[in-house]
Image 1 (cartoon, one colour):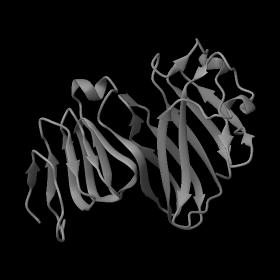
Image 2: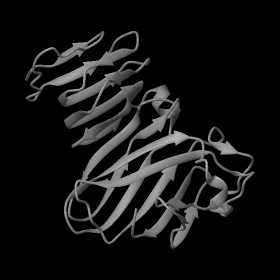
Image 3: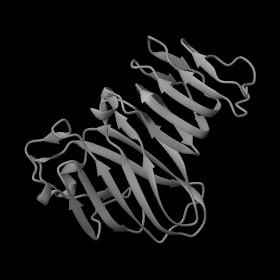
Image 4: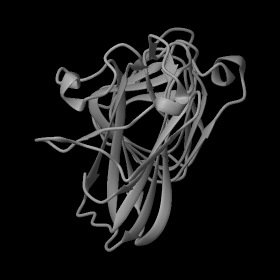
Length: 231
């Protein structure tokens, strides 16, 4: 539909949903179950959140006014802009994010892709600064609380650390020269022990070994790894 739609309950799709240029707003009073379709504009304005039950796409604009948009083990393709609200839950970093995997397009050349992701009630976004993308492709990102089962092999501090894992992977034929990643965590919610920002380090698991970036910088709520060349 090219008309605006406001949904207060569950959305099922028993036929063909044509997004055209219409906006869909999810504003129920209880958690909403949403069928996986392609939306043009999608707004989540439900403090109790919504769950999309499969792979879905937002073509133009995604607005996260209130609540958590969950996609489970599926992937949400976000092809356009994302805006987070200015309400209390958004500014408290406990809401207004996507829980699950998000895929965004990467243009050829240099660009920075922001992922408005989190888990539970913690907003823990990721940002990837891409250098020299040879061909347009995509990046997929997600985050979960906790560290991998092989965390001990990283050589990082076993007592004072950030208790969160981010996953970033290329898709759709993406090739690039290098990239930097910045991850944001909750202080104190994501912290184990009392890590010092000046001592924080970042490690990447490539499927067979842990590797370090060429440089790491950190603040009380972010850690940045620079100079990665592979995923």
